Length: 233
Ligand SMILES: Nc1ccn([C@@H]2O[C@H](COP(=O)(O)OP(=O)(O)OP(=O)(O)O)[C@@H](O)[C@H]2O)c(=O)n1
Ligand SMILES: C[C@](O)(CO)[C@H](O)COP(=O)(O)O
Image 1 (spheres, helix red, strand yellow):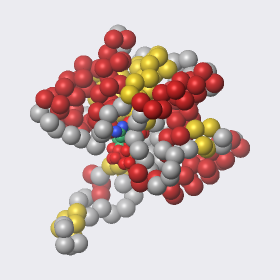
Image 2: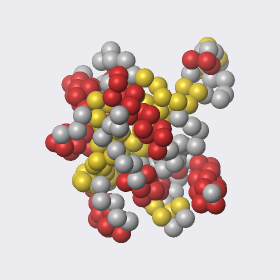
Image 3: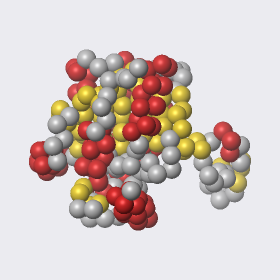
Image 4: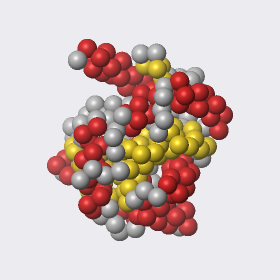
């Protein structure tokens, strides 16, 4: 069965690791801001009912203009983000709470290449189990290294996955996780971590390696190449 959902797209970060003057979510890829590429994926997803966009307060006006220009009719609200990603997600969740949807996705504004089939698979898993995230098996051997640059452990690679977004949750589950995290002053680099901290099981859905988070300059080379390739198909 097709699961209707709302999505919080977070785009209020500074993009320090990218090192560009313009924040990475606003850099142009084939003449269109990265963030617009991302929003278009959810605009095109039939089961996506509402999008809440979280941006820097100073970027609201230009985001509103793009929503109009690119016909992003599912963007229902634009909220100001917070200091950390987790704070920005929380602002988005508060907005989406009033829409009466059971399922919510959280997605990075700088992951423009997520596939529709993977969004669907993630939703189905979250509907069935309460919480699910897209991920890919790691390709490198991962080592744990101490402060002296000495390897202390080599975890079994078969159990290691690189976690992506979207991350999909029953709204009540992820809301509770964020409230608990705030109450106990806990932080997590993703939303699944907050849900895990409550003792709730999170399922992994295998995605693909093209769903990169644009983080450092070489990711932009991939993005340009990927877009050029897909527009030839
Ligand atoms: N306070 C923050 C921090 C991050 N994000 C968003 O979360 C996503 C993933 O974060 P990351 O790639 O770490 O982005 P930045 O924080 O912008 O990057 P950096 O850590 O290099 O500064 C991005 O879409 C980013 O805009 C956000 O909405 N609010
Ligand atoms: C949520 C995330 O995309 C999972 O890979 C990631 O945690 C975002 O932020 P980070 O600062 O790059 O860890």
